[in-house]
Length: 395
Image (cartoon, rainbow, N blue to C red; front, top):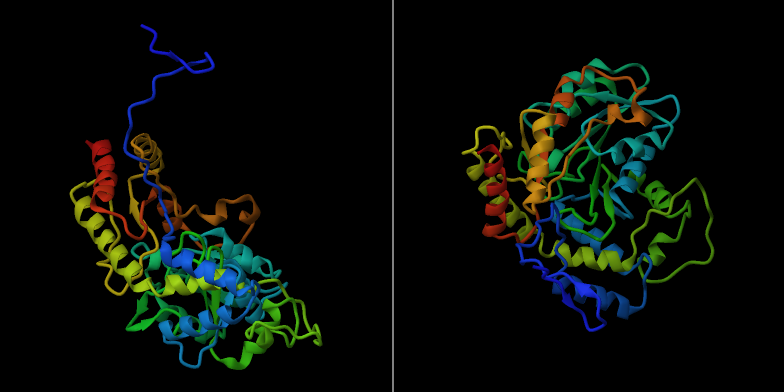
């Protein structure tokens, strides 16, 4: 029997479908009342560009991370922070920078934007962080820097990285886009080391909608960093921090429009005030995933208890690429979104010519990883649905 019923205009319409559970996204930024209040207050103040909110966010980020005398500048994105780090490290044409292939290509693009050549190294099986022995194997007289990545909030082997850098006189750029709030041996990522870049993009633990930050080892480079961030202008930053402008200035170098405005900074301040809550509930969700997925032998979970970690994503491993494709399709059909973090960058057309070490772990892991939903203020039913969809696939 035809179940169509006439609409008021006489056009047939189908019977409404039976309601189902809403789909579960991989990411969902927290945009609660605190964010709306901060945005409204910043708009009401009437100063939209880089200003006093920007300066305050930098001060509060420094306090939270325990930076002491290490300066921090906010930027328009995490990629911008990485590019500034590459420039401050002196990278340019003829230089090489060693990077893990297993990370988002934004980091590689930030390095190659300087004209330097990216050289790929492998990752450790347990942490997915840079394999120091692999990095050592590709060092040449042209090597100028190492880009180390803290995958999913788990710190890489920083002791090994900095020992290698010291041995060969290299700069270190830490891509800490995933690791805001994580600790390494009792100190927060960013409070030690050389150049450290964070991301506050739409799906990170805290967001400024789009944004990032760069931590420098000391104040020696702060003036150059100000100029790089604000299109080469030498003397406008301090005035903008007061919600003002200077109309007499010089342009002293190639610079970029990498500064962070007052409204995203206000959002960042509201998020920073809640970051410990975000971290604690994400830790709890990851531990629940670990515990429940341990009952599925075909799934390999992260080798960590999440103590002192600020988890950005939760990633599992399955046997191979064919299993991954089938599992992701199965979960999608059940309303559970998944992702892949990451594909090996050495397989991309733009980087396939790059020199590299053996990348056996990268090749294997890139075929196995699946990112499960993880965001602040999930609930038990959501996690149960995610785990249930995986369990039903493996029977």
